[in-house]
Amino acid sequence: MPTDLPTERTVRKTGTLELDPTGEGIAIDETARLIASNKVEGTAVYDREGKHLGAVYNFMVDKVTGQVAYAVLAFGGFLGLGENHHPLPWKALTYSTELGGYVVDIDPGNLAGAPSHGPGEDAFADPNYRGKIEDYYGVRAPTL
Image (cartoon, rainbow, N blue to C red; front, side, top):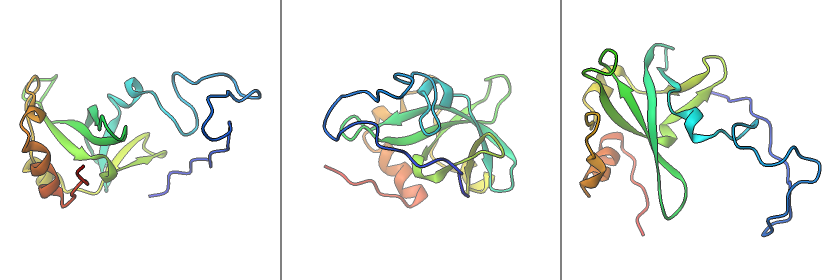
């Protein structure tokens, strides 16, 4: 699914912290290509047919690479009761400008059987949890 995002332009010399003198300063909320983490949280997530599945609860950033590894989808429940959190590999999400949210090419039935945890649970404290997610979705992240 195309995102229709503009191409980035070089704003500074590589390896410097020089600001773009023609720019509007440092973005703290959103630009054409960047978005603040607090604006991603709560963004709707849809299946490939455009059916609303849930919303991004938060996302997990790899401390070493600085890359987003997983988006944690809040799925099911009502007003937060009975809600489950499903970590999805970040690469599985595509932003749709038409829907104003992320699209995942995952059947809702498969999502229901995916590794999940409840609100307030720290599933990532289990060193095997990441492997369960990667095995379920057929994605293996490189290890150091």
